[in-house]
Amino acid sequence: MKSEPTEFSIDDLVRDKKTPWFGVRNYQARNFMMKEMRLGDRVFFYHSSCPNPGIAGIAEVCSAAYPDATQFDKKSPHFEPAAKKEAPRWFNVDVKLEKKTQLISLATLREHPELARMRILARGNRLSITPVEPEEWNFVTGTLMQS
DNA sequence: GCCAACGTTGGC
DNA sequence: GCCAACGTTGGC
Image (cartoon, rainbow, N blue to C red; front, side, top):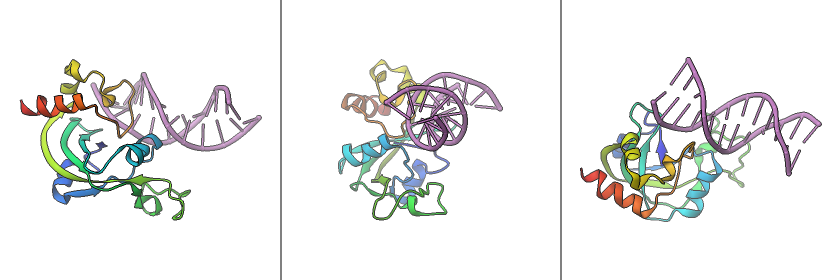
């Protein structure tokens, strides 16, 4: 799950322990939260659009998907005029901190053939939420984060 | 349904 | 700031 650290960083999650993953305005990413994620699933917390992009920590999905409150908030940059309370358009899950880790930079991720097929590394990928295969998860947590 | 125009993402 | 890639919008 990508976040711009200037908006919400791993240190913010360390402080808050838990957060709604608000502001997702892309149907594919939304559908991952609504249909693919399960309570207890773990996710990489990825810092994007920043001087040193990469995986900054691990979090855990701790709610089912529910309507994203920011779509109803006129003052929010994520406000969605077309959304109605009785017919919400955007949903989010909550995630809680598992741990902040050493930063596994994008450059490092790209160095390893084991991760060549990772969705987040795919050419032109802009999705803010992408699936991670078990082998990729194990390589990152078992090898990269141990060195 | 097509597709051009436009806006956004995100690495560099 | 640049630009490739992609998603969305809206006229037709």
